[in-house]
Length: 98
Image 1 (tube, one colour):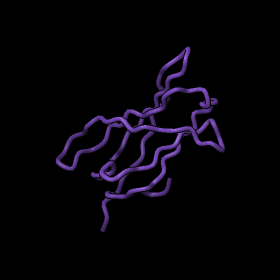
Image 2: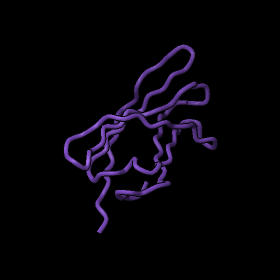
Image 3: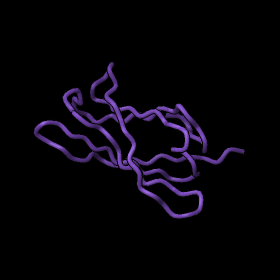
Image 4: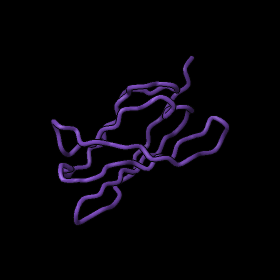
C-alpha cells in the first residue's frame, strides 16, 4: 500500500500471514482507528484470500473507512474448522489531504 489519505476509496490493504489461508472460513481484522473528533474507535473490516497467493489476505477500502488522519492499528483474525485466532498487529498511517 502506498500513502493513504482521508476519504480514499478503493485502496487495497494486503497482509502476508505466512501460512496458507485457503481453508479459512472467515478472515477479518480488528481495526483501532482514529476518530475525527478525537480518540479512537474499534471496528472490524472483512478480508478475503488473495487468489494468486493464498498466504495473503486483502481488504479493499470502502467509503467512510478512512475518515480521519492518524495511525490505524490492524490485527488480523481468522477461523477455520480446527483453529481460530489472531495474527501480529500492523500499523499504517492515513494522512490529511492538502
